[in-house]
Each structure stands twice: as structure tokens, then as C-alpha cells.
Figure 1: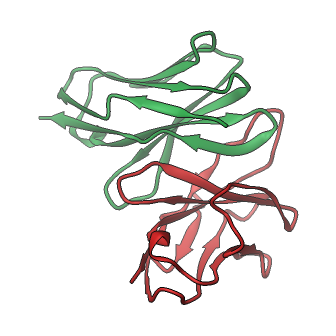
Figure 2: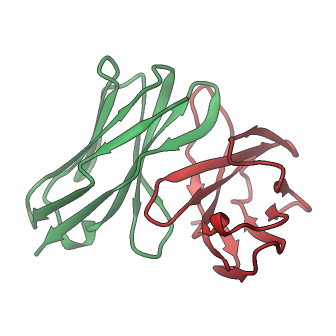
Figure 3: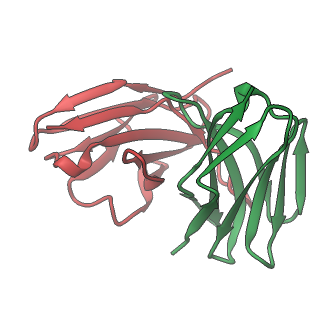
Length: 112
Length: 116
């Protein structure tokens, strides 16, 4: 079955610096990779996703890169702000299958 | 912007009791899901539902679990005889359809279930 690992588990950054979170997946058939942000007590919110036919996608201060050969994808947050503090989950799905396999989450803390 | 809603937000129950968790997916969505998150652990897939039947379920989704779409708007998860280890946050999600690639799944706010 699919296995998704996230690193690091906790990340502290100074406000204005960049944060990078990396996920690895095990199933080469995975073709869809979303990132969710979960603030304390709230629902997971999709912030960006990428499909296997592209290598990079950017949306303002957030970007995701995908390396299919190495089976890893990364979330990049630039110019971090205190409101970026949250738990970030990566996930991967299987071709022809809506099931998402999630990583354990990264706690990102932006220090003002 | 339409959102997935869930009720109740919190549920406390005695071991062995039945619970029903309710979800209202986004209105034009066709695929529905249940996930759970045990405190401090990863979000785990339970079941997906399409066209009034289960399309896939995980090994967690045993005979104690069932899902139903009783009407045109609700999607429910029933746990027949709760166990202590069922204590978790249960998330409902929905997606618009299944295209060549997986469509985006939108999550509800979750129901926190505590089994005593």
C-alpha cells in the first residue's frame, strides 16, 4: 500500500524567512499530491496541489515541487508570516483511485 | 463559498454504544469520504462512496462501520458498537467527480468522538 512520510515533524522559522517541508511517497502509481493546512481546531484546508504531469506549481507565496523519479514532493513557503503557523499535511493518491494517503503532518511555527 | 459541514462537533459516548456521525457534502459533489485522525497521528482513510455504494474501504473500516446516504444531502457514518480505540476526530470530505486525475477533496470541520 501507499506510504507517505513527512520531514521534519516540527519546523520553526523567523518571520520573513522561507520554510520547506518535504514528503516522500512509496507508490510510483501516485498521481495527485495535495497539501493541506490545518490550524488548531479547524478543518484541513487545501492550499495547493500538484499532479504528476507537472514538476512545479506556484501560488503567490506557496509553491510545490514534485520529483517523480525520487518520489518526493516539497512545499515551499516564502516570506513567512505568523498566520502561516499551522500543521501542514501532505497526501498522495493512486491513479484511478480517490483514496488519499496522508503524512503525519508538520508543525510549522513562525516566530515574529 | 460552499463548505462541507458536519454534526455534531463533539460526541461523547459509552463503549458499546452506537454513534452516527453526520455530514452534508458540497451540493454538486458526487464522491464522499470518511477519514479519521487519532490524536497526534496521521489522517487515515476509512471509506469512499459514490453512486450510493462504497467504492473503496480501508482495513480500518470493519463490520462495525457503515455508511449511508439517507437522502439527497446527508452522508452518515455509523459505528455500531464503539470501542475505546474509536476515539478520534472523524472528517468527512467530498469531491466533485473522478476525472483522469483525482479531484480535489474538501474537508469538513470534523467530529471529535470520545468513547469512555
